[in-house]
Image 1 (tube, rainbow, N blue to C red):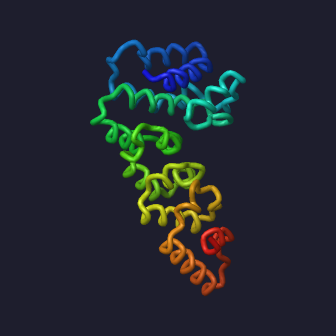
Image 2 (tube, rainbow, N blue to C red):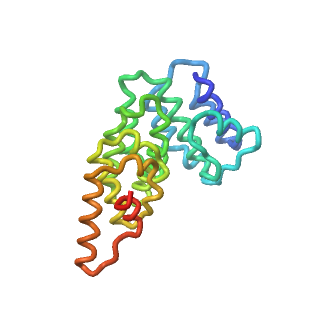
Image 3 (tube, helix red, strand yellow):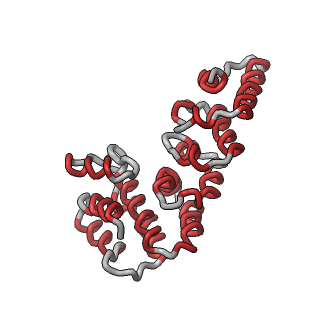
Length: 223
């Protein structure tokens, strides 16, 4: 097990009550390679109930771990998100590489909205994260705004891995539902002539209908 994953697992364990601690230790047989996919899937689903929604407050020594590990920051996020992300990282190391993509997609398809949101925010942290592109692109079709925000906003994954067509579709959906384009990580580096044209057409259509266009269109049209 990598040092980074072990550190994150320990951060979760420190916040477990007696019942959750017993469960956490049973889920993560850190000294054994005998890890089963179905058990990890069930643990990912149960983490919300057992770890809870309390905002994570890191101690000074823990904050240094969070900053230097290269993983996503969890300060102020629900504890269950830290736990679920730790489980994802653990699973990717423990399971055979040939099942990784299917495992991640199954978690997304079968999960509730909170499970999906955590998974999408964690995608960029996973090894060879480009493998999970289909799951990320598919998530953009959701009608649940919080799920869409989890992939579109404060998330480096789309800018790093989305093809131009899919990235442009993400930006346009953000415009249509009123999200701030400033929340899209790496937007300025992904502005293309095709995206400018889509945004210009959107502005024309809004004005023709007597409706205001999203104020953040200037970020693209004036780039």
